[in-house]
Image: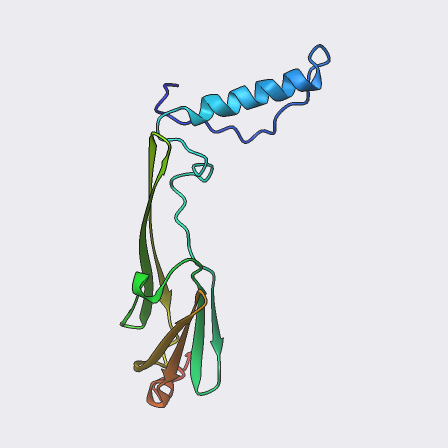
Length: 162
């Protein structure tokens, strides 16, 4: 395996060998960790596999005359979030860019982070696309989605012949 292919090591660290003391074992583990972090594209934040896309926790409940959808979006603002609805599919997306710059003596530290996610939820057939209200407070996006009574009446039973 070359240095560009990350090796996955899910196995826990082995206990110290009898010939090694606890301090030597710990030193070897720290050395292994530092070697791993020095590989290109690695950082302290790269312990999550790169193919994992974060998905916010959501909850859809029937509130009688409407549906209520809640999505946990900590660390975001309403300017970071877009909500769209088309053909019974609700799309919640967000994108965040952050950068910080600081000086420590002669050293300039400039950190940048970028994140994006998109989540699509198929809504019940009687959800009314024209009766949607959204609010965002303290990292919680709440959507109240009205119901369309006529849509419920379009459902019909189909007779099964024997």
